[in-house]
Length: 322
Image (cartoon, rainbow, N blue to C red; front, side):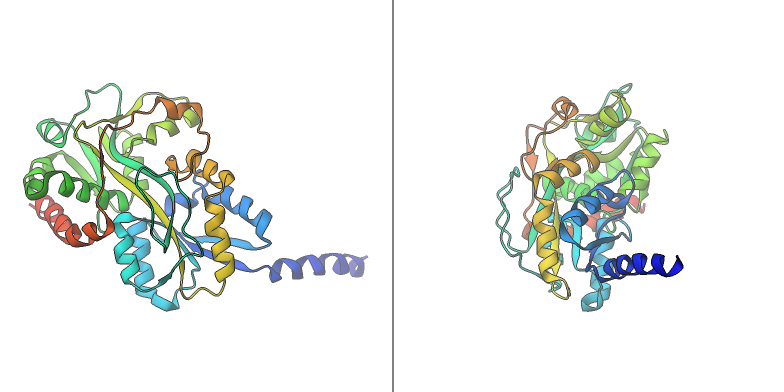
C-alpha cells in the first residue's frame, strides 16, 4: 500500500515543484487577508500554471527603497504598488523594462507611459466620523482642534501624496500651511495600515486616506458613519502602478501577469479589496455610487514631482520638527 501511495503522490509533488514561480514585490496592505493579494493569487494561478508569490516589506515608498538597495540582485520579477509620485524615481533606477504593450485604461488622466501599467486610482482625502463637522480646506483644518494621523512621505505613498498635494495647491505658501497644520497632526506613521488602524481604534479625529475608503465600511461592515472631507479647492490624484524588472527570469510570465491585472476579473477584485477605483471601467458595487467625487482634480506629472519632491518633503520635515 505504501508503494502505491508513493507512486500516486510523487508525480503530484514533482508537478508542484516544476511550476514556475512569479515573485511580486508589493506593499503590505495588498497582501493581507482582506487585501487583493489572496484573491488575485487564486485567479492568476488558475490560469497560469505557475505559483504567484508576494513579498511585502512595508508601504510602497519603502518597496522602492528596498528595490534600489538590492538593484539587479533583486529576486522580484514584478513590482506592484508604486505610484505616479514615485514613477520618475523608479524609471531613473534603470531596473525596469518597457511593457509588451501600453495598456488601455479608463483613468481621469491620459496614460501613454510604456514602462508602467496603472491598475487602480483614487483621490487622497481625510476620513472622519460623521459626528464631527469636517474641514473644507487645509486652512480650515489648521484653524480647528481636530487631530489627524498622516503617513511619512519618505516611506509611504499617501504621505508623499499629501506633501505633493500641499505643494501643488499652495506653491510657495506650502511651508506656511505645514506650520499651521503641525499642531493638528497627532502622529506620523510609516505606512497607511498603521495610520488607518489608529483612526478606526478612535485614537484620532481624522486620517489621511482616500475618498473611496468609506466604501469599505459601508460594504464590508454595514457602517455608514465614516465619510471623506471634501475640499472644494481640489484633491490630489494617485494612480497606482505595476512594472516588470529587467533582471526577471520570468519575462513572459511577468507580461502575462501585468495583462491579467487589467482584466475585468482582476479589476473587480481590486475595487472591492483595495477600495480604489479600477483602472478599467468595470461594474462597481452599489456603495460606490454614494461616494462623493471632488469637483477638481490636482495632479502633478512624474517629471514635475521629480522637480519638487525633495523640497516638499523638506518643508514637511521642517514644520514637524519644531
